[in-house]
Amino acid sequence: VKRIGVLTSGGDAPGMNPAIRAVVRKAIYHDVEVYGVKYGYQGLMEGNMSKMDLGSVGDIIQRGGTILYSARSEEFKTDEGQQRAIEQMKKHGIEGLIVIGGDGSFRGAKKLTEKGFPCIGVPGTIDNDIAGTDFTIGFDTALNTVIEAIDRVRDTATSHERTYIIETMGRNAGDLALWAGLSGGAESIIIPEKEEPFQDVCDRLVRGHQRGKKHSIIVLAEGVGSGFEYGERIKKETNLETRVTVLGYIQRGGSPTAQDRVLASRLGAKAVELLINGNAGRMVGIQNNKLVDYDINEILSLKHHINEDMYNLSKELSI
Ligand code: ATP
Figure 1 (cartoon, rainbow, N blue to C red):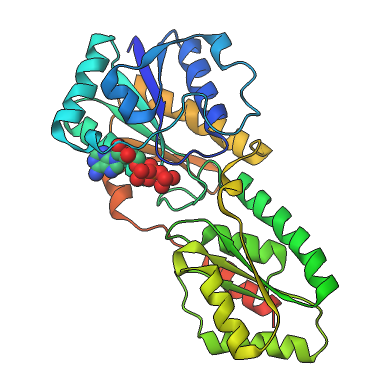
Figure 2 (cartoon, helix red, strand yellow):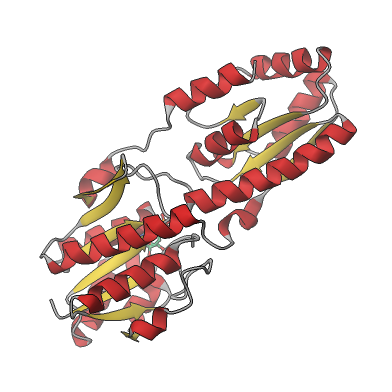
């Protein structure tokens, strides 16, 4: 393999830049050229790509977002779109592609691989919703952002004796809410994977209030529904002052944490290794601190699961 491409796709995540950096440097280390594709699959179809050198990824390891930009593309979901993308890569002499993104992006990588163009997926999303890897790039940074927000809300919650509901991102996955809830000391963690009876949540709030607790924090994953609606229901049922904070896009920004930088560097480099050793249609991941790789088809057919022990522990600690 003499030349490969790299792109970021779907929702951006902190740590995508260190992943791009690792891909470029690892490839050049092995005398392989790298083309950076801008705007994900959209840019791929349009031939929006150029050669990257060692310096082009300098001073980005600490930056949030992605220097290659990201995009969503409906056109790429069609056969013609995918064919156009392959033609562009052939025209530029690219022999393999590394896709940094979420499960939607992996579906695209799978399609290209099926059409004979080798792709490797690198999981990059704050949602941590991909099977076959304990962590996705961006999750740790987003988690730390959420915890910081919870700590701040807690200060004001104590001062005013209120119940606060904090809505986190995560799409259909509850990981961000679960980890943030446990490390932020939340009363209740409401996630799509677990259905806790509404009455139990209210009872716990009232019990806490009766024993003189000054504040209560509930972390709710967006996959469950609107934090505002949940807040209304709580207020109606318990008569406790309730405020809602929807964290939104601040969770996607910021400088990647050390954990995310290390993860991104390891996964990016591993993806290059797989590609230059002739692999195709695989996703890299990390399990028990060991690098792993799986068939993308297999990954897409599996569901990511939350850590049950952690969920149970969060309940024990918030009686
Ligand atoms: P995140 O979940 O973090 O936002 P994602 O990668 O899942 O990231 P998507 O918007 O689902 O984000 O996917 C990104 C892009 O991947 C899409 O805009 C589309 O171009 C391509 N893609 C998604 N699904 C398919 C598919 N079934 N076939 C081909 N391409 C696809």
